[in-house]
Length: 318
Image (cartoon, rainbow, N blue to C red; front, side, top):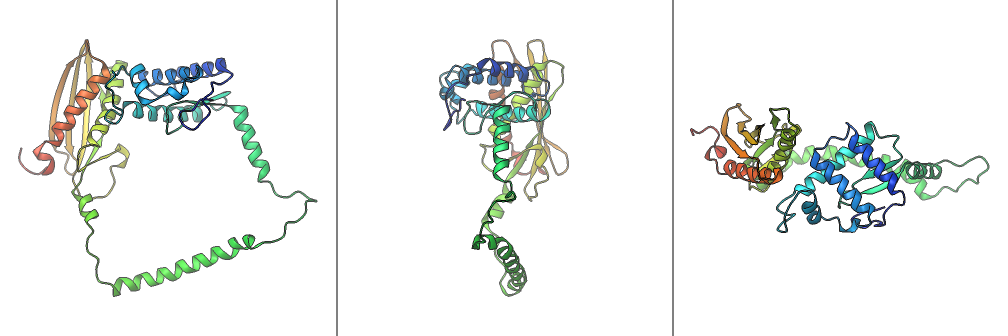
């Protein structure tokens, strides 16, 4: 089995079975990744089957799958890391929903990009071994003598709860006797930060390329905005995080007409719903890689938002 770091780098013996499993995954409707993610998974699996799992680094994947040139820098361009995380989540969903009975499991462990192959027999065998070790003594087995470790749980746990109850009574007295603590700088810093929620961009047409571009652009925007000082980027499901700092929602839509790309982006004040910044971006898709357009537009949007004078004071006039 092939792993990127600290694992067995040998190619699996059942290469035909792994390739058949890869075809099942790619053909399944439960494997939710765009086309570039499917190319990513197919590339790393084939490289591992050929015994080149140790060479699967972000630099080589970016050139082979995403068309990056020799100047690619993984620290400044997280496209490989973002796509690898998406593939991990998609594989977990696939095996939970429709791939439970598959003979081979393909996974991409965290910390590297080399895939890990395991058979259903290995997984079930490991579960049976673990279960046999946890069974109680059968009749006829000698009774083990009681040691101090056996008394630790029945005596130590009640004692721990008793100490916690005493501390709970002491803490209210300290609140009355101690002077009020000064507000820490960390709280002030948190309240001065600007929270931005990058919502999923809408694809206005029916072309699959629009959906891939909308997802990829949102991922790039998250990566770019995280590098801006005093910006806190939140996932859409974490809007309810409580701070007193300003909060904004970044929304957008993409439309592809022929070879033209039309993108509308707006920044909305989360307090009252007013639009404090908006812009339109039109690009010609001919002669340009989609990933390069995502990176270029995301960088421009992040720069314009960070330089907007209304971001620091949403209530002021434009």
